[in-house]
Length: 289
Image (cartoon, rainbow, N blue to C red; front, side, top):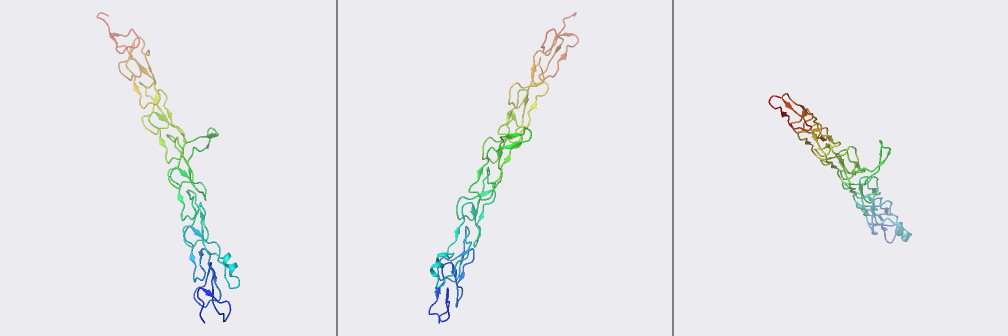
């Protein structure tokens, strides 16, 4: 009598061996029954001596069914003969898996049968598990604790796989959604609060000479700036003084200014006279006077 291989004989002195159904196997010879393919494996063909591991990206989460000569039709119907691809937003990274895993926070997948989920690119996020795609950072709403109302800040995500958007710091801004960085305020502009979509121009009498500033500086005494969004202040001309702006009539009778950027007026020296306002130099007194 021939020993059954990849098949079985359910009774003694059987005339022939019965092939194992798809989804089951019989290892070795002399088998009296077929064995169900374990979870994570499959066997699409009947009469086999082993089962195959499901490849990465697919799973088998049930055992195959035994096929006997008495119930071959029913067992063939219910046997685990194939592996199932992981659904979109899920993956299986190893062979022989029984469960697909959801894409982790910071990653996503829109295809079935994935072996890995793709990390979100810089400027996009996946805030929860099991997402089909990453979402570009938007102008998010956050609670402003000072104003106790919702403001519209500039945000960014600096690295791939981010789970949330970060807020632009003071001195920087970001006007567009889906960005991976914030830009420094340019010279002549400043931003004194985080999460800004734009920087504010320095007002006349103030300036910034470096990018990324949080406040504008006042012009030094003797210097002025009468235009907004400027990077420097200019010295006042002689006969003027400054407190951020130059004033032409400060130097009244008996005083004068001789140098640009001068803060105060000079007193008229002995032997000279300053009989009008706004002088840049005193007049020498005439002989005998």
